Amino acid sequence: MENIGIRPARPAELAAVAGLRWQWLVENGAEDLGEPDDFVRHFVAWAEENARTHHCTVVVRDDRVIGMAWLAMVQRVPTPRAPRRTSGDLQCVYVVPGARDGGLGGRLLRAVLDEARELGLERVTVHSSPRAIPAYARSGFEESPRLLQARITHP
Image (cartoon, rainbow, N blue to C red):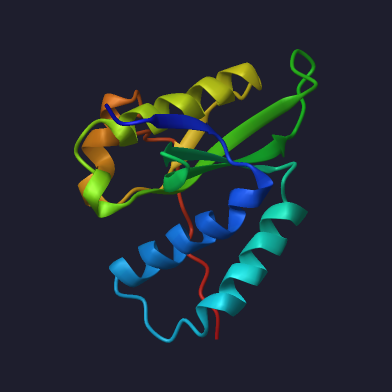
């Protein structure tokens, strides 16, 4: 039986999480990424600086990080009935190829959504690849005709 855990990332695991992010980028055809060690240092520093607003949940098999998901939280404008409002955005969901299609992604999504409920978030959004849409739908995500997106172009 595999020893699988799904839990918040520990500070000592952030370099491994950065490695997953790098692996994801390479897997999706990113080029000219620079040096992996430079990226890992930058990523770990970024994660530490943004720990209050960006929570990482990991899938661990026998002390090895094999999956991740980030919950980015943003404060929303208050209303008279809800002076504190927060929404979440699910980001960088990734499970290593050898561990896919066995239910770990769904367990990871449930863990992040459980955290969102515990934190009192109003909603969680995700920008998905076409391949992952069915997995998100199984976890309760629905298309919304009210959620729009503007692409910002840079010169």
